[in-house]
Amino acid sequence: MNKKFHQPFWFRDALSFTNDKICPPLNGGHNTDICIVGGGYTGLWTAIKIKQRQPNCQVTILEKGRCGQGASGRNGGCMLTFATKFPTLLRLFGVEEAIRLVTASEQAVFDIDNFCKRHNIDAEIRTDGALYTATNNVQNQQLHQPVELLSKHNINRWHTLSNNDAIRLSGTSKTLAAINTDAAGSLNPGKLVLGLKDIALSLGINIFEQTSMQSYQADNICTIQSSHGQVTSRKLIFAINAWTGKYLPWFKRHYALVSSDMLITRPIPEQLSQIGLKHGKAIADSRIFVHYYRTTLDGRLMFGKGGNLFAFANKVLAEFDQASSVEDKLKASFFDFFPTLSEQGNLFEPSWTGPSDRSVTGLPFFGTIPNQPNVSYGLGYSGNGVVQSFLGGEILASLALNIDNAWTRSFMAKGPLGKFPPEPIRYLGANIVKCAVNRKESAEDNNRSPWWFDNQLAKFAAAAGKSDK
Image (cartoon, rainbow, N blue to C red):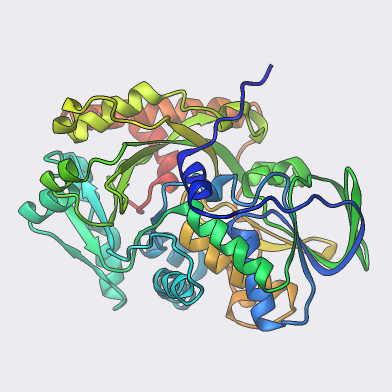
């Protein structure tokens, strides 16, 4: 028997501050120009960008639950860019496109902020930048590698902090070194997604919630079937990320579902101020399965870690909708970073988790389905979807409208790059690699040399990090 659904903090918080009403489900027949399956960041940004380009285009969104109740309403709210993935971008896409994607992702941070200001979305956005830290000597040796390459191509917005500033701004004495950028920040992910839903409705976009797609056919016209209705559409867009494999099973080897687990404190603004966390920077260490954290406007501290629970055959597990199964480990890591906060009683809200769709490259991918040119998709954000979904909306809107531009010509819009092994090899391999990474990084934390075998296995997970090494 499935456990009761556990509402993550951000979405629950956003509902308490907004007048969001559930849109009625699809009932009967419905005709539209473009149908989008999925009402999270990707689907909403895509719908909005289509209407901005072609106001007369009829756009319909089908959402199986409530808009934003998936990854969009439960992520860490860290606004991070492609910059520290620049070496991978260069290798896959070449110099010109790699530079374009980095600069576009950095501009997107400010574009999202400006969009919210223009449309009165109170998403608690703070474009205070980001901090990537080293918490052991090995991380310290690798911290600056992407920065040196960015500088070589004259697009570097990162700089090294002094030791005192690194400790002060990160809020923890665990920090040995840090790099800082202005093109990043943090926001309330639940408030952003519900704000986007309001804007979509105001633009005349049809949204049917509590409407799960059962099947589709795509010939000259797309037919999308749900339990109580049917949509016919010229174009169909899948924007369902972790759920893609359920409906498009041939994608299952192109991504791996793994949990990202989070907890958040109750408001403690004075205590956070005392340890230096008076800003809205997104902060992450340099592990492969990183620790990441940020504060909120009302003085909370969110703390998370990726790479904990892998799903066999990419099945969206019931555990992804419950309190974190590694909550005790999360709290132990939290107090390792912030020991003075252990004196606070009744410190945490209930923890939560969610599925992250990790691609082989650590980068998202988009495209049209072979032999179905009127069906497109986007997924594989690999834990960095807040900013990248804004760019994904540009790609998917351009594909749907048959626009020839830099987004539709991009190699990022040409489908997935690489496959994971088939099951059960992938599942067994993922857990073997995870254990090797944990042993390797535990040894490094204790200034010991990792086993050679663990070092080699950890290379298979290198794409999972926030920064290339």
